[in-house]
Amino acid sequence: MRFVVIACARTGSTHLMTQLAREDEIWSHGEIFGRKGVLVRVPGWPDVKPSAELEAELRALRTADPEAFLARVYAMDWGRSHVGFKMLERHAPAMLAQIVTDPGIAKIVLFRANVLANYASKLVASQAGVWGVNEQERRAAVPPVRFEAQAFVAHHDKYMGFYARTLALLNETGQAYQLVRYDELNSQTFIAKLVRFLGVASAPRPSPAPDPVRGSVDILSRFSNPGAARHFLKLRSRSEWAHESEVNFNPLSGPTP
Image 1 (cartoon, rainbow, N blue to C red):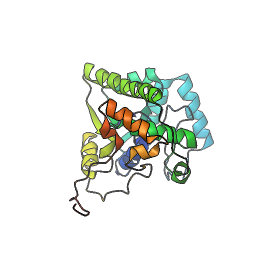
Image 2 (cartoon, rainbow, N blue to C red):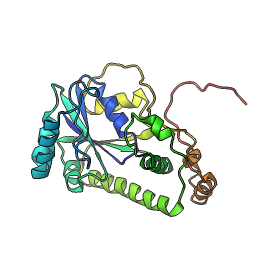
Image 3 (cartoon, rainbow, N blue to C red):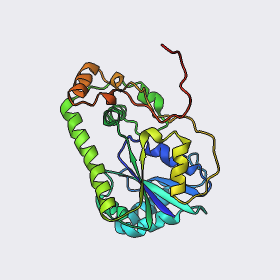
């Protein structure tokens, strides 16, 4: 089984790929069409990184023959029956369209419904110069970012436009796909459902630690001018974006007013 995770940046795609990699039958790579390189995972990952020779070979093949490159990555399954990678909205649009319409590739679309949280996360990561999941301290040290209404609207329209076009193409071409929300990523119920979609018979597993890139659920606290963001949300009837939570089937705990 070949699969791909399609997402925008700052939606939890690395966390999702790591979740899938916990399955004995699944091998999940990273951003193979990224601008910074070909992020494939090799045995021993994350302690073992791909060799410089393998990286150079894959880069050259990606440039010379993208289709052969795709086949090469899918062949790097290391004995697993299911192998996939993730693809972000800014990566190789022509190849993305080809992959989206290939019935031999299972599609997972990861969506973060709270666009303001996605926007804030992107600003923080850009200001910190940290995009990975393992440098939380550097990201936490970044002062609050500034909310700019015009920039946010542009971000929102680009973000939602990507998902609208992708889902329309999937539906128009009759593709089977699974839509996963950011708030479902730490729910083993939904992960098990996703694993079954890929055709893997998965045994129950303990819940993982929370996503290390998750910041405060109070999204407005990430801005230096929270009042401006709050006012914008109120005008656009999007006050629910002020907070972000996750799916949780546990009984409600804590003091009762």
